[in-house]
Amino acid sequence: MFWWDPTYILVIIAALISLAASARVNSTYARYARVRSASGMSGAEAARRILQMQGVYDVSVERVAGNLTDHYDPRSKVLRLSDSTFGSSSVAAVGVAAHECGHALQHARGYAPLAIRSALVPVANLGATLSWPLVLIGLLIRSDSGMLFINAGILLFCAVVLFQIVTLPVEFDASRRGLRLLTETGILYPEEASKTKKVLSAAAMTYVASVAASLLQLLRLLLIARSRDRD
Image 1 (cartoon, rainbow, N blue to C red):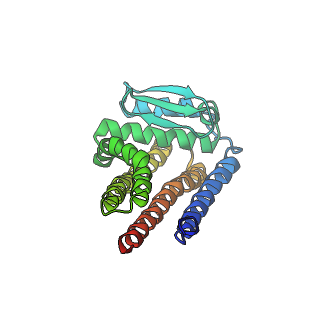
Image 2: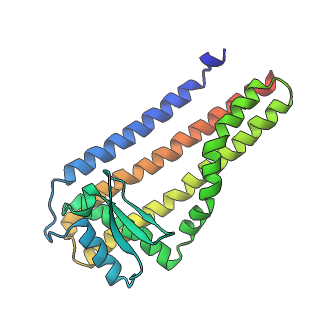
Image 3: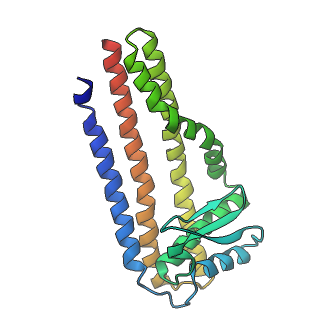
């Protein structure tokens, strides 16, 4: 009966939500990656200008392999831009670079949600690694002690959900900061920024989709625990 668990429908819904969000961001980025910014500045150049004009001089900008693998590393204070962003002067690439600058500015200004998210990283990683193995062990143990493993797994998975929820304001704020600075510094004209906003909005929806998918997974765990407790 375990292999015909009806809660698998929640897994399918979660996967469809994630796939839809991923497809949207990829198609939106591809569309505006073909639109060159009037300034002609590359993503790396735009990032360096934003950081310099904001008085952030201790963050370096480096290239990292991959497509849309852009990220800011607060530990080493390095803003890493992917191959599709670093040397491209498209409104999409410049927007992604500005978004990552937003994270660097959050770090420099002591933005509280970013600090909370950073503090949650270890427990979230632990939850992502151990939550389902603990639940599966609990399902295999037919005695009352099995519920202890299941509940422990659910508790750890809650940390994953909490991390993703805290991530939402961090990502939205980074995009808001980046878009504002692109126009304030003259890197993009307002009409160009409106196109960049579409790229960043699509990217933000991937984080919303992750939260939705995780909540569905949590609901599935709770339903499994309830069914196991009845047995």
